[in-house]
Image 1 (spheres, rainbow, N blue to C red):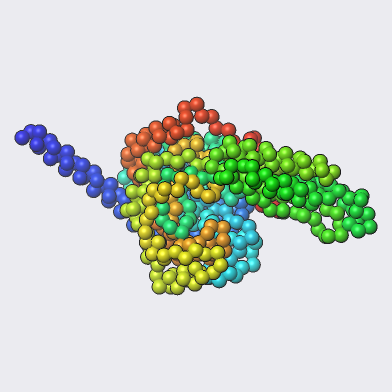
Image 2 (image 1 turned 90 degrees about the vertical axis):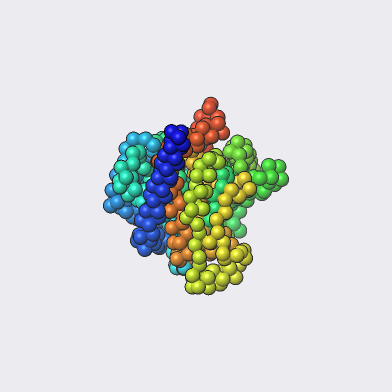
Length: 477
């Protein structure tokens, strides 16, 4: 009888704890929903600003001010980056961190309509970082309110991370030891579906190759000139020949950012911007060295000189299956959303534009967990963070299903209520996941044990950027 009573009491206590946790989560969801209009206005403002990497002054200040008014302490200009910041609430362990991004992409100005039309600017949020930053701030404020209401011990940190798009902002923050302050990191990213998976990404190294020659009249005295553009083209040709002799999963991209000013002048300066990607950063190291050799050969063969400026270098993501399970459960709780008739009409028209993939619009109301795809086709400086601290992220449907990132269609969707609805799904999922981690430190322990085993006890972080300072002017050209 005594044993039976103990079991009954334990079951009742477990039920009480579960109900209390459910109530905490319901309140967090309600808090975020209540401020949906406010967060939508913030996201729209950052969407309109469309500030590129390391130039996100107004976007960063807007997020900082929102957090400051909510009771966070702000440390601005961290890691020698004017637009990077860390917002902190609470003290002691555990320390849960949330990442926020807010940089736009160059050359993708677009109105929030389902036909291609520039707003006249030079950039656009084609990767949805206006939503990323705002949604993360919304989650952080909801968790802060819960901590304050319940007296929950621990520290919550929101990391304002600039220049993810090719500027490797988080790498400098990792180098500065900022993420080492956290026990676990949470993040998210705009997508065309709602998904959580313990997947990786591509390591990436990027830089600008600059060639210097001699200018001359291209018709009257071409023999006196040494064409920097010839050097760029020779380099590009050799690299393109090299594609046959690198691992099949390697990706090599380039754009000629400066090829001279007039056809009748032998260009004395030319520049080409390269990205090298692979699922394994060691392959990136090797291929990058070979690309530099191609540049050296091109300079030698054309009688020019060259230099290379390393702009970005990021690790592949170190996936964490345990944290993926935690976040997946919360995404399932939050669920997706249903498109309104107006949103459906917008989506159907957008899906008819070139480059779109025809997908079921009901995808926005579905949740996809643990996709078998082991690697993302993109690169992110979240990779470096994941080797510094256990990290997990999710994607939510902020774009019309079938939309590619880095497209004008992504900019258009992100400026509508579709983007804002997806942002709310992310904010709620991150908030619920943070609450779980604060209330159950054993979860962090489990995630850390997996992370340590995968990373290796002897692992030592070495940035692909070496010791260079932040490339604050990398978007000037």
